[in-house]
Image (cartoon, rainbow, N blue to C red; front, side, top):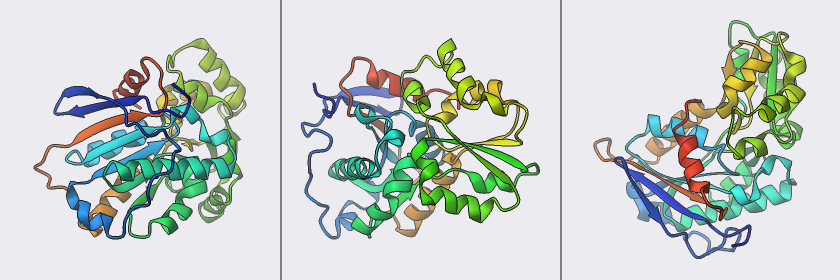
Length: 297
C-alpha cells in the first residue's frame, strides 16, 4: 500500500480491543467540506478528533483521556508523512487540512492538533476554515517554565520549523523577558522516536549530539514537540536532573473548557473510548501506537 494509504484502526473500549478495517479514502484525498451546522447535528455524542504526524500526539492524548475519560477519542497518526517538523509550511498546512477533513468525516465534534509544528503553521488557518469547530492546539510550555522558581536559563527543545516560526518568537518575547531562552533545534529526533526501541544506544548518542552541550547549564527544559515526552528520562540523563515542561496538561484543560462552553461534553457516567488510526500501512504500526499509549511519560 502506498505511503498515503490508511493502515487501519484499533479501538479500545472498556478494556476490549477490536481491529477495524481502514477507511477506503487515502490520506490527503479531498473530502467534502463540513456542512453548516454540522456541530449541532453531532452534539455531545461526536468524538474528539486528535491528529499528529505520528506517535508524538499520543503523549497529549494520554493527558486528555485522563482528564476526560468519558469522551470518545479518535487519534489519527500521519506516520506515513512524519515528521512534520522538517517539512515546508505549505506541506504541513496541506497535511493538517487533510487530517481535519478525515476526522470530521469520522464524526468529530472537536479537533485537537497534538503537534507543535502543525499548531504553529495551521491552527489559525483551520480556525478560519471552521469557525464553529472547537480547535485546540499545543504550544511549547514556556509560560509555566518562566513561572517556576528557577527560570534563569530555559532550554527549549523543538523541531527546526517550530523554532523558526513567529509563534514561538512571540511566545518567547511574551514570557521570556526575565529568562534566557535557549532554542535547541532537534532534527531527526521525532523521526527516531517514531521507531520505538527508546533505550537503544543510538538514541542516547543522538541526544548527546543535539543537547549534550547543555549538561549542567540550564534550569529547566521545555519539550516543544509532542514526541519528546516519551524520551524525557533519556533527555534527563543527558542534560541533567532539572524540571521538564510540556503542553499536554494545558491542552487537556483547554479542550475541557471549549467543550463545556459549547455544551459538547458527554455525560460523565458514560463510558469513553480511544480509537487509533494511522496513514502508514506497516505491520505492527498500530501495535506501536498502543505501546506508546501505555508508556509513562
